[in-house]
Image (cartoon, rainbow, N blue to C red):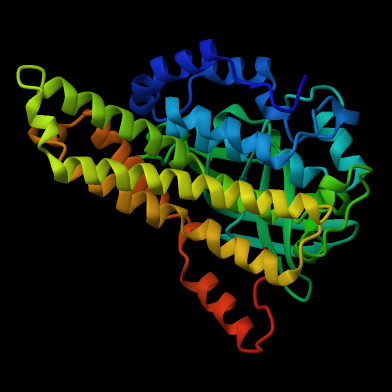
Length: 376
């Protein structure tokens, strides 16, 4: 398969779009959508070839995520996060990779990296882990989970846990991104997690891996911090399309209305520019990383982290620009533009989409302060 050939077919995109309302109502992705994305290979785009994956470049992966988001942002959000875990697991021990992918390259893994509700302690040969983790997108379709925890005296690690060792609680009653099914993962009683099924945060920061393809020399954080906002680019494309269609439909009796509507024309132009800008910056950054053999400098990594974090703020400004003049029908529940307005706004709640700390770190480094962020 050519790296430029789309992985997700138009037929699958049509299926995803047709299931959008159903997924929003059921508060999870449909099994049919997940099955279609497995079949086309979306979930294996960043998986090493030795396990049946494609080892695609991040550029190709994010093109596909954006295309999916044009059909449904929730599907792109949850499936993008699930798919990017193959990259992180590729950096872990060979034994962990084998346990997850040897029998099925389409094994799906969810995550929750926030360690606030977790308790992790050292034990012989591994760790004891318990707690509650929120926002585990697509978890009901997954048979493993990556869970964050801080070990006293050792620091932050990600723990790889099989489905048999945790429960999923249905907590996802929200005002946007309903179809992501981002429920809670719960481990009520401590479980044992062997050392080989953990990933040290500093190993991620230092890009430790044993893969042959230099693409895995890239800090996996550079892929993850993009996967939680790039779906908004596709959603914004969809919002613009819907907005234009509704405006032209309302002017069918008098086409001259549009010719004289300078404010609406200007807003459309501004949103088109925002979409182009967001895509251009992201693909430029990954092209630069590729030129550096996937080993960008710390300064570049900090800049790219900040630029990823401002995507949602820019997308919010753009969707607001459209929604403000979308007309009275857009205020009714279920209107497609209103749904996208909620989805994009809710994405801002993810910690990676709050630019304050990343801006401070980027600016401070220019003034001689050392980097303070190890998730870059």
